[in-house]
Amino acid sequence: MDHSLFSHPAVTARLNRLAAEQGIPVQQDLMLCGGTDGGPVQRSGGGVPTGGVSIPCRYTHAPTELMDWNDLEACARLVRAFCESEFD
Image (cartoon, rainbow, N blue to C red; front, top):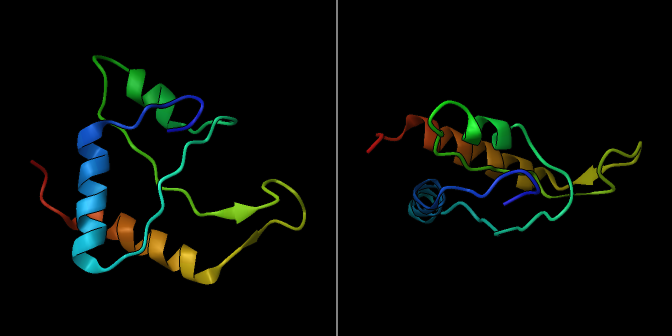
């Protein structure tokens, strides 16, 4: 969830299932500030099942924004697994 989007339960379940199957570490997050392009996508047309994958970081949008390389790789692996998986 972020300020503009409630992740669709089926999308969240699929991301969590893929992460568990492939040993990808995840942490759930509720972002009460800020938003993503997922919100407008979710509300477009008749609605689109939408979710989000974010790279955990500190000092977002600052010149010294920090992240852990392992988190970046885990997010990339999860997005790739999602894209390569069969759609229900």
